[in-house]
Image (cartoon, rainbow, N blue to C red; front, side, top):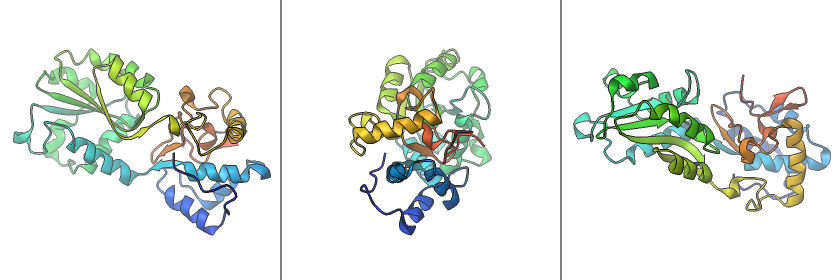
Length: 274
């Protein structure tokens, strides 16, 4: 998370302008009116705390996503845009269970950000169902592409599906925009994937952990109360991750629910669904 402004800082035009500029790329437009409505869900005594939560949101916009993909890809040993200079065959595959999930959109972002949208690169970008016919071997590299891993659970579960399709023993890389340290460790320990990511989140990014120093224990208890209204099942976010992470195309459910939950009792500023 980002460092919020000091307690008692004015919620003035400059602060609103900073929020709106920061969140401008979200899939559901964030307007001043929406911010004001979101803030009004907090009691007058907690308005300052709510503003500081918005300050602390780590927003990863499309430009950052594109830059991250370029840098991550260029860091992989054996890769080159020129086929003759690559080591073995390369395949980029959405790390998704079905069509339309985040892996598909991230694969498209990777292709656009690395200037590989031309037909000459079509054979590099395939779907999971094509892995059997391609039969990648130990000399080849399969890059599975997704946006985020918070607990590692979904990644490890999905790996069992891909594992059956990659019997030739290729190098398998899981490319992510962001992930928690614990998720990266679990993926490394429990799968044959090599996870790489642009933004690594630590215990300090979990709002409810003692390691998070931007909010005191009383403030954390107050926030948790609002989060329980927003999502009684996962008030600390999925896996109790307690994150303040928002991606331009979606908000992970590992993020605290007051930022994304939307129903009769609460309206999140960054809804996960249209």
